[in-house]
Length: 321
Figure (cartoon, rainbow, N blue to C red):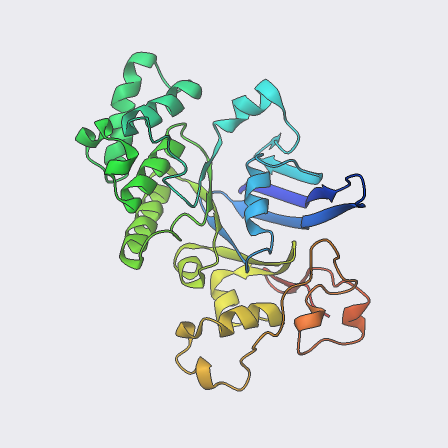
């Protein structure tokens, strides 16, 4: 891991056992099945993919909110993937999360200011007497007014609630902020405001983002590097410009084809890929390439041998035969 790398994930696996009752055989859902990537300090690393690809589970594993089956997660010099108890609590100040639903993320019975104060107290940030002022500063930094500290979550709009959640995440002065679809519940105008706020805060505080999204427009606006996931694996990874200008994996091209706003002529292009069928069940991962059953370019080798993620251009990796 280089010195400019903040987050390093290696061979990450998150498997969920299901079944195993009196009459059922025990099976395993391979939600994340051997993912590796690095996130540079001060950058935004995006993970995209359709529902069930494993992108949100990857984020939860990095946050230690689901049990890691195998692999390592390093934050700077600390291996956080298998920390427990007090050791994990000490490191928790360094990485925080912003969830998709801001209303579900806040206690409806607590005032907004108390949500920030609870985070400051839990993480033991600063002197107790200075924490109310710190909460006020966080409100101002995220575009809220100090007098709103006394309001309850239901008295805010969806965009304002997400600003509260972001302020709470920043309370511990983290190095890494993991964002799981943070703007998908907001309408388009508010999305743009929230994304611009996140970019400003990143510049001001040197934040590093791990950004999970299904919205390619949002990813194109915010992220420096992007990984595309399919059925628990990364199938393509590249800097944003390279990935959007020249997607190489058939699945990536299919995602781009489903968002023709990137290319006004995409609706009529002959190379547009229209996927047929659904992804295979993560309970029964097929041999070979996981995308082979839906890929118009699949070969015999694709159905028997799983392709490794390899570099085909500087910084551009693809898992495809």
